[in-house]
Amino acid sequence: MYNFINSEENKKIKFIKSLKQKKVRTRESTYILEGIKPIIEAINEEIKIREIFLSKSFFDGEFKNYPDLQKQKLNIIEDKIFYGITDTVNSQGIFSTVYADIKNVEDILPFGRYILLDGLSDPGNMGGIIRGVDAFGFDGLIVGPNSVDVLNEKVVRSTMASIFRINIYVMKNIDEMEILKSRMFRILATSLEERSFTPMETDLKDNVIIIIGNESQGVSKEMKKFATQSLYIPMVGGAESLNANVSASILMYESMRQRS
Image (tube, rainbow, N blue to C red; front, side, top):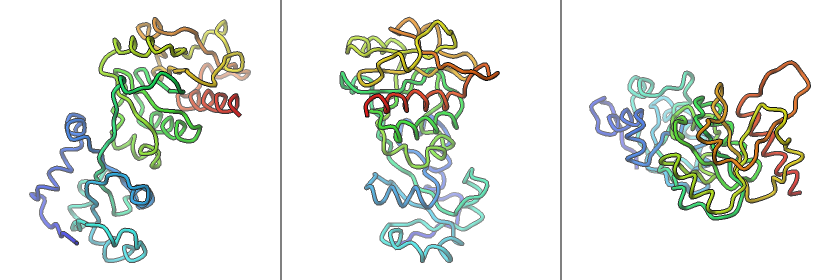
């Protein structure tokens, strides 16, 4: 039931370290999930957990308070090794490796509401948008080219477990926009131009893909070519623009409001 690890040369430790690389996460379809609450949620929602790792101090202390954990196969790591491989400043002493359910663009059905990220670079923004997709009942997130890796540890951490409750699709290249266009989606690109339509003037109830662009450059010219309409969020204060996560949340909320 319990496997004790006391060497950095252990093959499981080496595998965890290798997951810091995007190519390994992609090849293995595996990401690292940290924290007691997300892991308990993953267990209860029957997410495909690969392995669970505890620090020795967590195992000797708080572990007894979590009966759901006690039913699992666990790896107990000596503290010095455990805290040497986790990126979290104040780690709770627990993380797991989880199988990722990443889908292809071809898997998207010709209906529903989706957020498409075009060159989004900040892990916190992506994590926040994933939480919004979950909270506002969107049908999925499409990760476009040049965006931060959706399985990045900082992204996963900031999703607060929403990552395993939504559909995630990763584009291989921008040419796959032709697939989405052929399925008769209305493709809406966010814009700072006031002559664009506001969310309140736009039907966001269904069959829409909303493009959220890069934090500093916005939606790319290449992606704008596929847009059927531009969306502008009106503002009255002195701010020039909104954070990508905030913009996405406003648009998703408006879509949910229109459907109610």
